[in-house]
Length: 202
Length: 97
Image 1 (cartoon, rainbow over the protein chains, first blue to last red):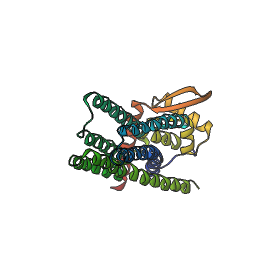
Image 2: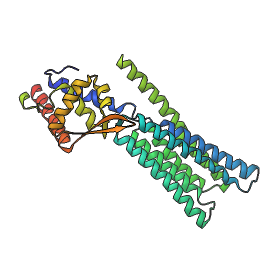
Image 3: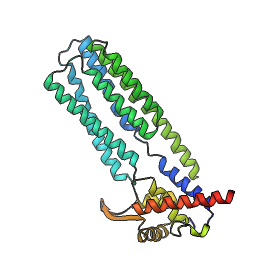
Image 4: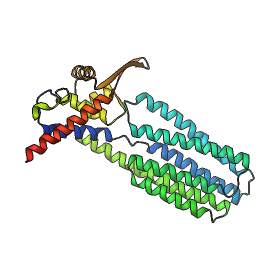
């Protein structure tokens, strides 16, 4: 870039192009949604099969799968931190939102372990999925996540009318709609954005 | 009107750096260098000028045994940038009349 006098029009163009450069690649949270989406989806389906089909008493043990997600998230975030060149308000907001969501799930599980898990509690978990994805979608301005969040809330209401076993399937559906599908759409969007970026750099 | 534009900001590379920093929380020197397509020498000089004007903070530290320079816009920098954009709009608006 050469230092020279330039017109106000060029100034505005420069400001705009630089701001656009920071927008690209900042919404790359797709990997977390994919990993957590598939893990929790498998856990829901697994719990349903163990409880409903195999009548296994300790069907909830399948939720130990989330330890894999925690280990992955810690490993991946440390790796990302090392190679990170920029911190944006968006990436920080997403990080704190999901750390907060994780802690909320943990606290809720602790409370329920004390007061007893019953068929009334599953809708609350689905409702929280909705909150996380809706807010994430609003932060990164990604419509599929916003819609996914709203649908998860609808499923939370719908699950109230189902038996506990089938509430687990409502949970799986909520995860599919609000995590997994938007995660693939987000990944495609990021791939396209990166391709455009490479083309504009040629 | 044109002469009233902040001379610290009315310079391509410094304006580019400020435009990047206004939209992020903080950025490493290498990020700024990559996005502005500038040389390390020129960028160093320009961010130093921005620092002297009080528009940015520069934090130098070591990360995994490598020196790392991180830049962050100051409140004064944000105000100056907003004023610069307003002045530009006034200038462009008056040109259209």
